[in-house]
Structure formats: C-alpha cells, structure tokens
Image (cartoon, rainbow, N blue to C red; front, top):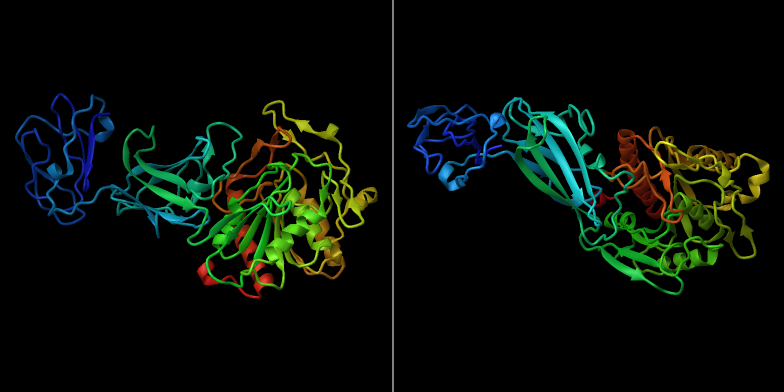
Length: 508
C-alpha cells in the first residue's frame, strides 16, 4: 500500500513513478493545489454530493486507485495543503450515538458516513481487557446510495455475524486465544472499544476511519465502598440521591471471588447493590466444607440498615450456585421480598448449607460421570448430578414454598454446564402446585452464563476453583438476545416487587 491521505472527503494515493488519479471529492472544491511538491492539480466546483472532475493535470503524474496501490510510502500532505478552511469537506466518519461514552449495558447506534455509494467496507471492533487479551469482531457491509451505514438498519453480509444486528460488534467479540471470558475486574475504569472501518471485504489493510466507544460500569455519582464488616467480604454500590431505593444482594457462582460488574451496573440503574463473596476470596476457602446461613444473614442486615434502602424488604440475585443460595436465603431468612434465579436449581448444590438447627446436604453427584471431549478437552458436568426427580434426593431440596418472596427464574436451553432448564421447570411446578405465581423464562440457544447485555458469549472457560475448562454452552446470536431480554426483565421485576412501581424512565 502506498501513502494514503484523507482530508475532508478527499482520498489520495501516490506512487514513485509519478502516476496520480482522482478518487473522490464530497463537497465544494475550487482551484485548490492538492499535493504540495506536485505540479498543480485543479478541480472544479460541483453541486454537493456529485463527483468532482479533474480539469487539468500539469504533469504526466496520475492518481491511482487505492485498491491498486502497492508501492513504497511517500510523505503525506497536510489537511491545510489539501483544502482551504473555507471548504468544509467531509471525511469518512464513524459515529457512536447518542454519545461515544456510555454504560456498558447501554445500546448505541453505530453509523458510518462519507463512503462512496454502495461502497464495500469491513467494520472491526477491538477491545483489550485488563490482562492485555485482545478481543475482536468484524462484519462486512455495503454502504447505501447516500454513502452511509446505520447498523440498526444495514445488514451485515458476513463475518462474526450476519443480518441486522445493531450491537453485533459488541456481543460477538472473541479472543484469538480459546476459552477466554470477558469479565470486568476493575469497575472504576471503562472498556474502550475501537471501532474501525476498512475498505473492501478483504484483508483490512486500508483504514478509512475510526472512533472509540468508552463503555463504563459505574454511572455518574455511584459510589463504590469496600465492605469488611464482621465476616463480610463485599462491595457496596450506592446510587446518587437520597432514596428510598430498592436494595439488592448480588451472588455469583461456584467460581468464587468478589464479582462487581453486574452489581455496579445495577447500582447505575438505581439499585443499592451489595456484591457478596462467599468462597475463594481473601480468607474465604476455595471449597468450603460448609456454608453458614448466618454469614448471609449478616449481609442482609448490613444492606437493610443502609439509609437509602427502602425498609420494606430487599431482593436477591443469584447465578448458578448463587441462585440456589438466593432461594435458601428467601426461605430461611426474613426481609427478602423478591428473588431472581439465573441458571439455578431448586436443590442445594455441591456444598452443605448449615442453618439454625438444620443442615441441607448436597444433592448427590458422581464425578465419575464427568465427560471430557477428546477434541477440545472441555469438561461436561451435565450428567454428574443424580436424577433430581428421585425421591432419594429430596432431602436436598430447598423448601422455598415456605417463603413469601416473589420469584423469577431465568435459564438457557443450551446450558451445557448442568440441566438448568429441567431444574427450573421442577421448581416452578412445585411452587405452582402450592398456588404460587411464578415468572419463568427459558431461552432457546442461550447458555449457562447469562450476563448483562453486550458482554460476549463465553461458551467455555476455566473454572477457577476446579481448575478445569468447563463447557457453558450457548449460540452467539440467541445468547445475545437472551441477555438483553433477561436484563430488562430482572430490573422490571425488582422495581415492581421492591418499589411497587415500573422502572423509572431516568433509569432506562
């Protein structure tokens, strides 16, 4: 590729043999020296949107098509050399609307302007995570007759996804290293997504334009407060404003740790949220011999005493192992009004749960039923647990029928970690037999890890506690749509049952 210059709508390439050829002008251009050091090239004034025609070339040099350039770079002229300040030209522009800075769960409009009519281009998104791992996605497009692209209307012709997918460049991000999960560690900094437009559907060697989308996990005015009170290992997120506001406890799964990004996004939407660790963090053991209900009771009491939290009860949100803990908290502890279970079950899994005068044993399992793929090395745990319908396992059930809380169950039908769809159906049936109203959504093509929207699908990753690469399942497009829908339902459910209201428009 030779030197390529773009200044206010003009795209040029030059070769050492002195050939030169006009590519395109978008706006008024009149009698301008185009390349310093060359003999003067003049163009005529034309109506907006029409081609600028070359009037004279006082040299045997020509401009060659960008697609045929293959010689050594030469110095580029400046924008001032190309166009005078009185000619307000247009370059290829990549835009993120309504703002290039937003929350991570915000949908945005990605647009490109200044292309040729029907021009073929490739869009690429790139993101470096906090470990330096590069995640990328790309899609091929053809501009409209006006030289513009709008990803909310323009279909992708192939690449990481196809069809009209306004946020496809985000949810299809993938690492070149297999089995990497994109999960934010430091919620005080954004993910910066570089959006680039390249000419053609080829090797992405000729960049036409770019911009950066800053996607934040902490909204304006939200406070992050580390909590080490009593035995608690947690982080409290306080939205701006005096309250009263709905209060939530956020629990992740058996991978352990203190996971903050979902809690920080919920706080940015108006929830006082406590992200709670319960294993594999600081002095909490990676695989506890027993989990104590009193620990979770401390978390409930801590959250309820926050002056911003509405005093009529709180909500619990749990994923996987955190989901069955959420059900247990609502069953055995007071003050819980609403529970959301994501990819969970209705029994106590993997670690005994000790309460005041009782212990719920773990649901029986047999690690001899673990399946490992010869091709990928991925571990499939879906057949490890004994049949949950066998009465011999029912002493492991969580008797959530006793709870007065409202319940929302969410799962994916392509969950390859365990049979969450069957487990959720069983729970819903049990509650309905007791005359309870239950919300239940099972998503075709969605996997185990239902996350906030626009985080890309993780089909497999290492389980931090087990040290194995686990197959989570999911199909890219289906999973992305499930995450968008589930996120909306989670917020609406908690607003309804904790505040007796719809989601405020200011929190959308």
